[in-house]
Image (cartoon, rainbow, N blue to C red; front, side):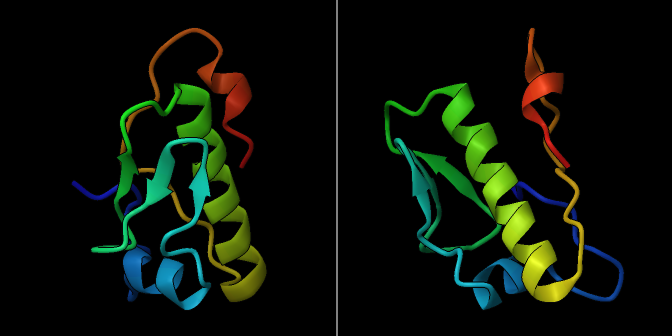
Amino acid sequence: GSFFKNPRDDYAGKLIETCGCKGMCIGDARVSDVHANWIVNGGNASSRDIVQLMNDVQRKVFETCAVRLEPEVRLLGRGCERLYEL
């Protein structure tokens, strides 16, 4: 499913793609080439890779479009609150 919630009157996938984040990778975590609002694990992505990619996408969308993307997924596990920067 989608990784980020759609902001009011817009689409997270469209904003992510507009900012050039489609295909962006950290480790084995990647913004999908099929749909920009999917983060996929190429097989060996760590949770840290996924959270860092999430942070980088959020930062780029905010810097480019002045929109704060909110995760639709829930981050579970010890230390996740420290990894989530925005």
